Length: 459
Image: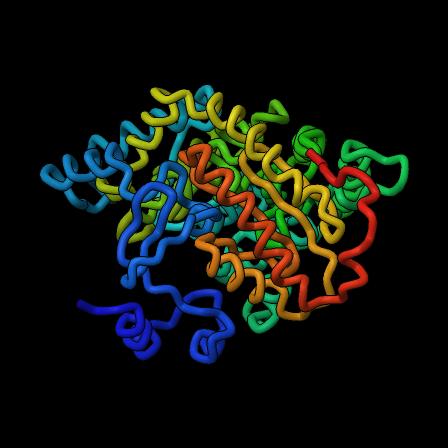
C-alpha cells in the first residue's frame, strides 16, 4: 500500500501546487500533507494520521467531508445527466438553483450567470457592469473602485480590483488597476472611536473619490463585512449602507463579492443582509457546493439583464465557460440549500459561535494576541511577533497537533465546517493555544511575561 512518502514524492515531481513557493515543500519549510480521505471535519493521510480541517479547506467546506446528503444528491444526478452545454440548452438543476438563489434575495436579483470559480464570478460582474454602461450610452464608465487591502481573485481582471501586493506585483504591466478607497477596518479605531466611526470615516473617503471620478466609474466592489486575504479585516455593516446610498447617488454599481463570506459565514445567509441592502451584483462560490464541485454564480438585477436584451448580438453578454451551470455541481448546491433550510443552520451556527468564542478565551486574553475578533462563523486574531516565518512555524506546530490552520501572515483565523461537536471544538481551541505557545517559545521571552491589559475581543 502506498505511503505518505510515496505520494509526496510523486506529487513533487508532477504537481505545481497553488499559492506556494514550491521550494518550501521540498526543503520542509511548508510540509506537503498527502490526504487519502475525508470524513466529517477530519482529513486522513495515507499513514493514518488525522487533521481537523479548521479552515474548511480554504473556506469552502460547510458540512464536512463525505457528507451523505450531498453525496446522495450527486449520485442521483450522475445517473440522469452529468453535463450539457448551457448555450442553447437548459436543465432542471440549473433552473431550480437559479430560482432558489433569486428567491433568497427576495427576487431583487432575478437572473443568475454561472461559472466555475470565484475569480470567474467576479470577472463576470466586472464585465457585466462595464458592458451595461456601454449599452446605456456611457462607454466612458469603465473603471472600478475597490477597498484598500481588498482581494477578489487572481485572474488579471480580479487582480486589477485587488490590493494585496503579494499577489499582484509581478503582473502589474498586464493589469488595469482600480482606484482604491479607504477600508473601514475596525482595527483603525483610535482612542474614543468605535467601529461605526471608522465605517463613517471610510464612507466619507469613498464619497470624495466618487464625487471626482463617478463619471468614469462603473462599479465599487467590496467584500461585505470581512476582507479575507488581507488578514480577516472586519468592519461595521453601516459602511455597506452608506456605500449603497453613495453608489445610488453617483450612479455607480455596487458589486458584493461574497465568495468567502456567503452562506452563513458572517452570521446571516448573505453578509450584505446585515446592512439591509442589496447589491447590483452578488458573486457566490466556495460554500455554494460546500466545496464539492467547482461552481460559481453572479446574480444581478432585472434592470441589468434588460440592458442586454436586444436584437443586436453585440449588446448581448458574450461570455462563456465550458462547464457553465454543470448539472452535478448544481445538484450539490441544491443539496446545500436543503441542509440550510431543513437543519436550521443559521440558528444552530449562532449557538455554536457563542460556545466556541468562549472556548477561545485563552487566545483572546493571550498577552501576544491583538484584536481578537469575530463575525459570525469567522474568528481571527493578530499575533504580536517579529518572527519572519511565523505563519510557517505555526502551520507546522498546529499540524503536529492534528489541527489544520493556515495563518495569513501574523493573523491566525478559524473558519471550521459547521458540524463540529463539543469534543472537536474543545480540541481545536486547546491545540491552537498549544501551537501558538510552542511557536512563541522561540521568540522574545520577555514579551511572553507581559501582563494582559484586558479583553482584546472585538465583535
